[in-house]
Length: 459
Image 1 (cartoon, rainbow, N blue to C red):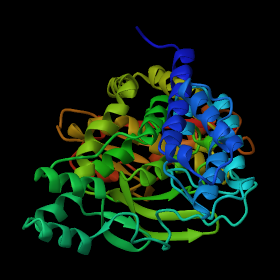
Image 2: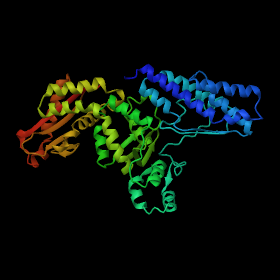
Image 3: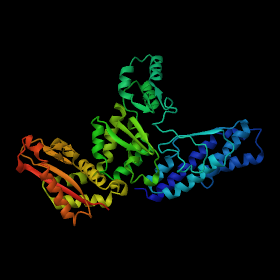
Image 4: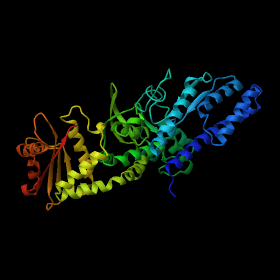
């Protein structure tokens, strides 16, 4: 029987309460403390029993109160370690109870880090950046470091020397194989970093295999792909082929823009460890880098997990390619229109500059839709031919099949009267620039070259 949204929320809330109960239970030694007053012990017991019963009514003060009790017992301010702080938010975002969870987390973090004099410092990790414009907006003295930062860059995993020393201690002469399988993580400019989980499991079992585990952020990536299955398929295919893609990433990921911000999509891949960033260039709020799959271990999971996430979009790919190959223009337009209504947002097509932004976006979209035809066509984008550059050309691998030239145009209300005129201008450009020259040089007859133009309104 499938669980409803309400059932999922109840289960998640019970899980949160259970986590706090376990945290309090780990400090049950406080019950024997000679430095705690009777009222302190009473509060400790009361909160612990609330969490045991699944009650989350007071979780916002749970950590603050526990810090105070620990301080009174040891007479030393404790350090707060918050691993994967955003996991509850990631799960709430994907499971549909974001509004309920966000308020609770704000109160919890405010009470724990802002209104809490009983801790020395805190270290928080997560896949979304801890920033002043997020849940931590009222906190002071925040220092944030992402995977592209230099600070602590040799502390986020095992260095190569540490892996070599560990293998030597276990009399395992397999460093060459281990490096080929697990090396590749990069933090700041620190290269040759290894995932401790994978190395420890390998040393325990002695088997070179993938020990990668699912995370809540994987589920979020899957949800974004499910909603927009055609957005990044072409670039995913490039990564799987071992190629490097140059992308802008957004290290200030905010949940309210995840559904429309493609840069956040790639940032999640980076923070989750699926891809690594090299040649990082930061320009103001923008960060550009060369991206590739992290290592052989990750590539294996990348192939199975990420491609599986695209399965919901397969019908779209199949319908589009069938319509294209059979020259069904109306069906092609209907499919693109359906994608525009169900998947695209302002963040996709953009508005600045209008002359190229939308054309570039649609070219990338169509490349993603036709990537499954690589076994039948050599697909080329933005290549010189004749007296200009075509947007997309499809060279058939078999001579009896049609070739295709595609040109994308944005409707310009100042220069054109209608979309029909925009389309006519696109076809005119194909003819005047002689875009078919390269195809003809490849031995394809003029009668086998199908010229396709795509026009759109720039809203």
